[in-house]
Amino acid sequence: MKGRGQNRFPIHYGYGEINVSRYFVLYMSQVAWLALGFYLYAGAYWPSTCTPANLLEIYGCSMRLPENGGWREAALLTWLWATPILVALEISRHFGQGKD
Image (spheres, rainbow, N blue to C red):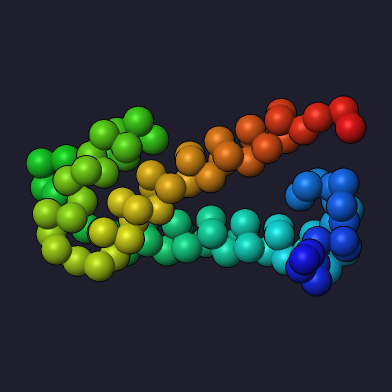
């Protein structure tokens, strides 16, 4: 017994066409994700012994963010480490597309 949605796109496996509305929502969600990161970064309190000046120092100091105990610092730590994983997943999805 097949489910209702299984016959809709039997050969696309997640690579079907994207309508304009979904394309718009996809890019708006990416902008919102980046805005969330900027908001968290702008209001976070870094430990006094670790004040980052560049991107490598930000990731190096990020593990010490929760020492202050604030929600914004914990959320920034999660955002910082989730973003490269999400980018890598998107890149692997594009490189993993088959010819069929």
